[in-house]
Figure 1 (cartoon, rainbow, N blue to C red):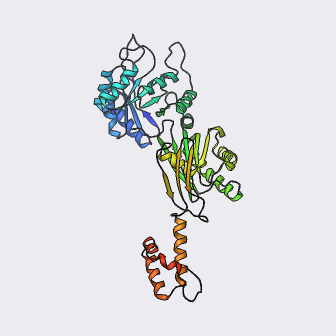
Figure 2 (spheres, rainbow, N blue to C red):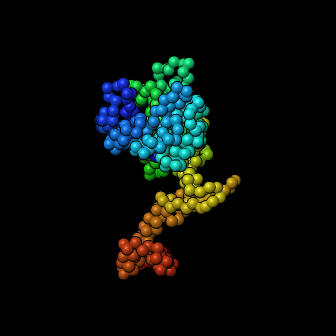
Figure 3 (cartoon, one colour):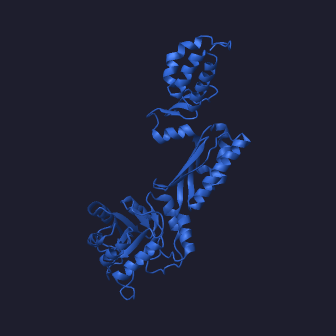
Length: 402
């Protein structure tokens, strides 16, 4: 995708405007870039060629007015080809259902993408038009023509935030807010309305990580928080989880993102904690509990890597576990905690090393020196196999059987 999240500035002036002309459009584009714009929208080949000097992605349009047809924003393939030749990286076109002198928008969208090799930007006026454009391959959908498609109705004064929210929650492509956003407050409201995301959270005992995706599944942002567990029956762990989720909520608010669903994997999570954990996440993240899915962290890891029945997950961190999930079956090996086993985990390795160190203290000095050198070289596994017979002997003066 060419466009990043941010403000797009339209650099256009009619022929009767004192600022009409490529030199003025270039200056406007440079000023927009200095002000933090992420892209420029310009009309006509000459102005498009001029604004490329700003070095930002250019959304090109070609206005072709007709007395017979209401559609004038890039109405045909020839208009699209001309602005791509001028330097437009993205072609915007009228994708309303109104009559036009050219191909239907669905065909035009596909031709521009396939034959010109650029992204497409669908200007729409209704939800149904937006769905149709997205289904026909539009790279972006914008509310540009909301309030302008029916000449019998006066254009509203306020932007169509309701349509924006609807599109942001339903479409699988990025949604652009355009049309009557003429104050900083309205722009902020647009970002808030359009910042709807699906949130994934992996809560581990050491650290927690989150990722936010737009309705189309593209990653919008990611971050981290302190560790916690699903042991919410323990007041200390309950507060740890609450603190971690508050950190995630604040990070989302700082980025103007609002979760519409949450899928969380919590280490140590079990069915007994389901209701309490769900309520906590709903309160912290400001989302209805019905839109929250909570599983243990290993189930989440399996789902992230395999379809049901497709593979086996082996995880060795602080603890260790093997997992296989199929339709109706859940096979788990290990993961019962380091006090019981969790062989191969970090804790298991550390405990084995400590075990050998203390066994060494009960052996003769020469043998002890040999063990110390082996541990120092990090060859604990090979030494373990080579020296295993010594476990059945009694050590030196400590009087303890190893």
